[in-house]
Image 1: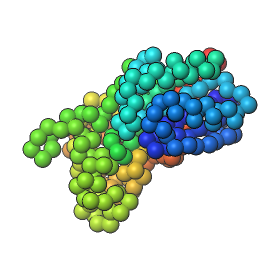
Image 2: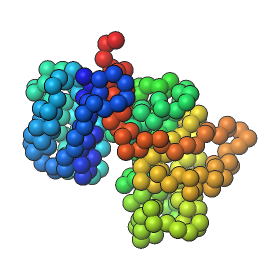
Image 3: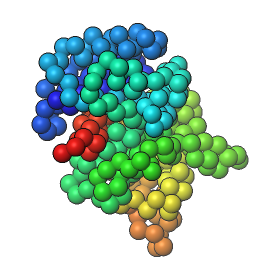
Image 4: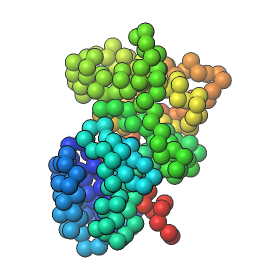
Length: 266
């Protein structure tokens, strides 16, 4: 059984897969800020499963190659040796990965045709990113963070996510994307996202870009404006296809499944 854990800033989802992308068991709990409490709650929920053959955990933070959570954007976790703790408790393969990278793995593999290079962007509290090559998350792309790119905006160089993320839009407009009603608001969203895309697209040359997260869920409201913003790259660069995430709420869990299947011996 492949067991998946999606650690969020407020809640943690736990699911188990047998064969295929249908969870056969699922539960959730509020994410404790204290790491010892988190481990205890996770163990309590995992004890409900009859068997655990592998364990994959998606965390909203920076993860090193040893499975240590170096820091998180929305949790006070620092240098949390998560894989070490789980390996000590469960004698099964344990994988720890950034949640946006896992969501990327799920969304790109869900496309009708898996592209050579697919880019996933989750636009929510920050801007998370994942690059998927031929359907797989390669070690060379474990650490990339597109949201931290410096982009020139309003007279100064600043992080892309500081002015284009969901939290930045709330700060600017005083309301969340779900409450936007004017075309001018969506044009502003497209403008801010387009500035970063015009840097990313020539550097990565993705075939497809998938948008998820709280802002990405409303992609159909700003997709045409966004295409217009990146059209300045033509005719020298072929524009990627821009699409909305298919299952944004379960993407990390599904990504855990894909990640484990790619890591485990066949």
